Amino acid sequence: MSETLCVKWTITANEYPQPLLHCRRCCSIKPFRTGGKVRVNANGKRIDAWLIYRCATCEGTWNRPLLERRPVGAIEPEFLSKLVANDAELVAQFASDAEDLRRHAPQLKGAVGVSVMKSMLSGDMCRPAVLCIALAVPQPVSLRLDRLLAEELGLSRSRVDRLVQEGLLLVAGSNAARALRRSVCDGTQVKIGLSGLESTEVASRASGHMA
Ligand SMILES: [Zn+2]
Image (cartoon, rainbow, N blue to C red):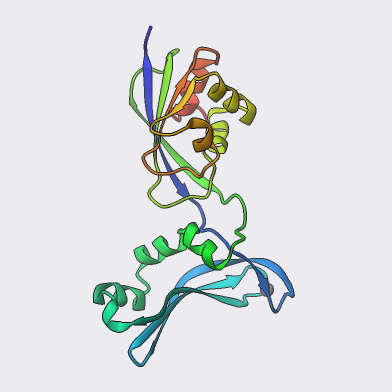
């Protein structure tokens, strides 16, 4: 009676967050995208570094500050050589950091596409009573937890809300109602009681066995 299905969802963004900025050439607000190029400028003993973004319409540029007037001695040499070399992993880390990006560009383009890779950890897909979802989010993703659950489980957002009100949806270590309104984060564990739902259908969606 107490069958629990445990699944893991690994969530990756299909594109980096795009700041919405006033483009001088277009004379309007446009999304800007990064091609992953870093510019480093040494001025005496101080270093500036930027990640280059281009207007999606006209290719006009915007430089996102990564280092500002930083003394050379205060920068890890390995970090600096990675910056100079446009190290792909480091660039990906900066480019996907929406929180830091918001310090320079408060408005980001909404809803970037994400890919959700699902795998089954344990349990049975046939009418489970409880569904446990472990989220792996290697790079920060701008996607609310309630939207993710609704889309991936085939439920409406209001149905997801109701599960929380009924105490059937729990988020380990936090207030579920609050966690649902925040961006998905790595290590989140969601537990859903499936008594009022089409449990086999929800289970096959959750484990990726249904398109
Ligand atoms: Zn433009």
